Structures are given as C-alpha cells and as structure tokens.
Image (tube, rainbow, N blue to C red; front, side, top):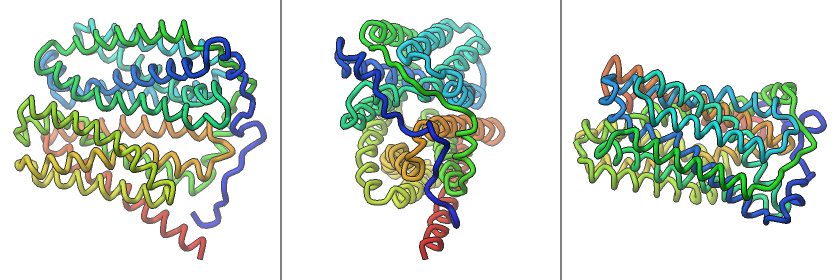
Length: 411
C-alpha cells in the first residue's frame, strides 16, 4: 500500500536463532521429532475436515438440515481462530513438547466425544474442543519443527509438517464421504480417535524436548496490523478462504444431488480433488518464487472461474468435473502463495505473523461455512456455490487493488 515499508517490530520478535531444541533432540534424532509433529498435523487436519464428507450422514443421523450440520465445520474454525493468538501469548516459554502433547490429548477428547455423540450438542462440544486444539497446534507446530533441526534444514522440516496437511486433505473428504455412504458417520471419528491416540503415544516416545527462551506480547500483534499492506494481505486471505469454504463445505451433497454424480464416481472425484490440491502446493511454490503477489492473483482468478463453472453448469457432469479439478489445483496453491506473500513483509516477525495468519485462515473457514450454511438453509443447496463465487470476487477485487497500489508506490 502507498507509504508502507517492510514491517519492523519491537526487539525480541524476530525469528529465533536460539536452537535449544536441536541440541536436546540429538539423543533421539531430530527428524523423528519432526515426523512426530507432521503426524500430528495429519491427525488434526483429518479430524477438522472429516465433516465435509460426512455432512449427508450427520444430517440424516440427527434429522437436521445440511446447513445446520455444517456448523460442525464453522464452529471448529471459529474456536481455532480464537485459540491461535491466545496460545502464542499464553504459552510463553513452556516446553513445546509438552504443549504439543497437551494439544494431542485435546484432539483425542474431541474425537471420542464426536464418535459417541448421541445428540447434536455433544458433537458440537467435541468440535469446539477440536477448534481449541487446532488453533493452538498451528500457532506453535511449524516453529517447533524448525527448532529441531539445523538452520539450513528448517525449510525441509516445515515442508514435512505441511505435507501432513496435504495428505490429510487428500484423505479426509473422500474417506468421510465413503463412510457416510456405507456406515454410520461415527465410524469415521472412531478411526480418527485411534489415529490421534497413536499420534500422542508416538509424540510422547519420540518428540524431544523443545525449549525456547522467548515469548510474545500482544503489542507485537498490534504492530503488525498497523501496516496497510499487511491488512490488505490478510483481507485477501480472508475472502479467498471464506469463498472457498462457502462452496466447498457443501461439495459432497452438491455434486451428488445437484450434479447427479453417483457415490463411487464422487469418491473418485474427491480423491482426484485431494491429489490435485497436493500438486497445487508445488505449482504454487514454483510460481510464488517469482512473484507471490502475482501467484495469489492467479489463484484468485482460477478458483473464482472454477466455482462459477460449477454453479452455472451444475447439471452437466463433464464441465463440473473439469472445473473441480482446476479448483483443486488452484486451492492447493493458496497456502504456499499467501504465506510467501505475507513472509516477504514480515520477515522480522514471522512467528507472530503465522499466529495471525492461522487465526485469519480459521476465521475465514468459519465465516465461509456459516455463509454457505445460511444460503443452503434459506435458499437451497445450489446457492452455496453462487455465494462462494461472490466472496471470491471480493478477494479478486482486493488483490487487484493491492497490485495497483504497489505499482503506484513503485512508480
């Protein structure tokens, strides 16, 4: 934005050069610890997005609308939004091993409650607990993994943790859809409970002590948000993610009922969606190396056009399937492109920026799911895609305006 400079923050907020965790990891091997954190990423993201595929089953099981059932997604995201900055400040210098283990215990509790829920309220309590674990996890996980390895291996450690997200994204929705079509939806959460328990045991045994000599203060969050450019980046992330989840939350019933795609073909399509999203991580990384801002612009245009095709040609399976694959590729590009764009202007305060980014991302999921829920409840299933496209149009407008302001500033 005009007049902005690369952000600087109070002393002590820079990326820590102290790597106490790497030293303490030597006995067990630092990469085993990184794998333990990556497994945690897989388990928690799998639990977060299972309801996208389980939505029809949850709706039938509790005899509620799919719009109301989608609150299982938005409630988790809203509480993750609240938990991320609070965890970053409150956790202080607590050993990250025990912090991550505590969050894994919360994940187990959330999954068990969801698997035994006889009432929708119990399921919602489980999903809220999951949100608290999710926000706390993303506030500290990537930095904790980086502190286990040497400086020149930090990007590799971070990539491994993010790979856990990508694999979970491939598995969660089609697995949920399959369970919903063939079994009681609670079976998915039973499996997730077993996985989260195994994850906690693995972390207890193999995650080394990860000490830190610094904490964060609220003033550092305020300092970041004073920048117009940073606020514009966060605004773009908010609209892209909210637009994505206004439509994607209802993608399983939409493709099944509106587009008439059968269960077996739908599972194949959703698996393809996950694989294309993983490919999008690499495509986005390559594109963002040249210009993160341009890469974000490309992703915004691609997702908007894809969702518009799904909405406008809903009754025609072929264009819908092609659009869903393009949508997946573009969505896979979003996290890496937006994070690199943000990192370019927050290098001296990367951890604080990551906590805010986690909050914005989760708030956007919650708002997008809520908008989609309201649209489906009061208008119909078809409306979810149109509302998603409308929000994505706002994202595109904002990133174009930021690009224009940057050209004016440089000029």
